[in-house]
Amino acid sequence: MLAESVGTTPGFLSQAMTPLVAKGWVRSEPGPSGGYTALVDPARLSVLEIIEAVEGPTDTGRCVLEDRACAGAEPCALHRPWSSARSQLLGELAGTPLSSLMPRRSA
Image (cartoon, rainbow, N blue to C red; front, side, top):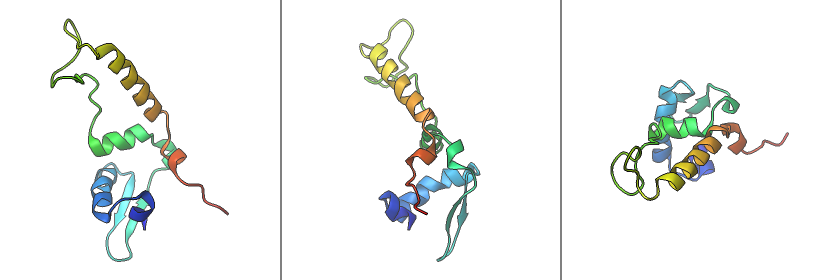
């Protein structure tokens, strides 16, 4: 079962898969013998694309200390290091294909 193999519940898995189905990356097959089928090669999707499909777009302009935009004339004290770290993280996630996280199948 897919939920077990990724360490989650079937209910949470269903919630996470719904946006992937909506994007046309996965097909949902209902019923007791149903499941999910990948429609896009996992090597063509980045981890960031999956995260943003499930969680929504990454908001790179929000302040980490306050609920406001953070840039321009009044950036917060953490703006520069946080922006740098966020850029590195997003770059790493964008450059990581989903297929690299999948277990290798033995022949």
